[in-house]
Image (tube, helix red, strand yellow):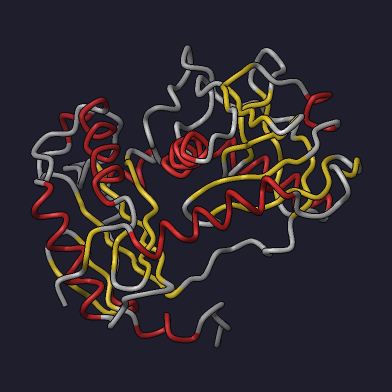
Length: 301
């Protein structure tokens, strides 16, 4: 059966698995791999713009930190991961319009089970690079509020960029059933956390507000936007934010590597601002795009 891909060029991509490049049809991991057995893996989403890998150091540091917190043994060096990334991009001729899903699993087990002592083969590195433009419409998206809560650090610390994403997926299912783009997730106290896939920002009286990074991912694009706000003399702060503050905000937008900076037009049927991208959102998005054209780690090919 032929399945239509979002981009036909991805049908013949080469993918790095463990220590080599393989065609898409052959790129597989063992049924004994910890990612299959228990979602025991960490990951990063990285973008390539005009021959540069954007925020590569920050993504690699977060990957290493997550693997360290998870107690992975024999973690590949940064040099090995960078070489694998560059080799993958070069083999596919990718220098722009590219998103990379970089995954590090605890590796293959000797037998099924949760005990990390069964992982004696070392971690599995996966470098999946695809031709992929930002996934959201530039004109904006619609959201609902999910009934599924984001994890508290008491249960599973969001500072670990892990592969246990079932609560996010359940929230996305709710969004799909509601016919909108994504879902807002609250923390266990009822404050805004993030969406199922992105960080959240609100604009009120020309000031930028974003939830504390307690139960949400401390996103790299989120941090970039906060730095850009400072550069542009835009007041910005982290705060506990309620649903009412979101509904009545002048502007709302989301941030993330996959979708960059995306205006939010509606939440739970409430129009946000004038129902179109706001001026501060567009100003920050333009500034972000400018940085993607001038910053990043140059590709060696």
